[in-house]
Length: 216
Ligand SMILES: [Fe+2]
Ligand SMILES: [Fe+2]
Image (cartoon, rainbow, N blue to C red):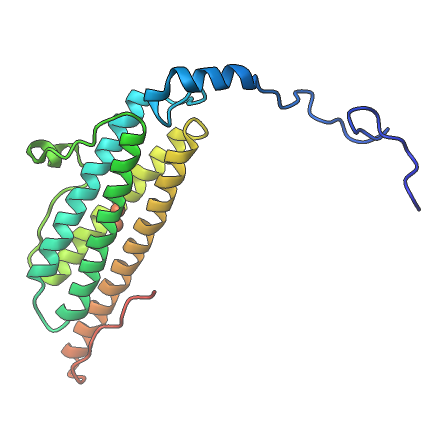
């Protein structure tokens, strides 16, 4: 049956649930004036609700974390030795490239927010959340990488919760990065499981086996 109720001037039908009592209103003229006045602030406008200085500090720590991850994965790529080395070294190289992409994205966001990406190597390790650890054999390397990924996952999750809705652009970037770190951790956990399985098979005297490839 057709609804014959007449909407009021706000578009509400009698008996409908109440519409929000705060209509979306902006002072477009004032926004336009502020945009012109503070053009040197670039992407940062009066609508930026986060503590910019604190965000820049946190982003520079995340940048240091990513650079340390690039260096650690590169070391592991060049130093990987053993029967499983080839496929795992390729995985290290792929991760190193993705960590570099993260570093670049974070550095770009720091400049958008009016900051300076801190790439000073002198205190990189102390600003990084994760550590630079070389590891002995390939299994130890993967264990060190998995620990570093798990640290990044925890700290980035905290950053995302802290940013909440105050800086949605930075939060979305960190969410995208977090998704990749979780995949890195999953890849490493699978590779480690594959190595244990292959070692057990070799001990039993089975034919020499290549560890299963990581899931993609
Ligand atoms: Fe990363
Ligand atoms: Fe990662």
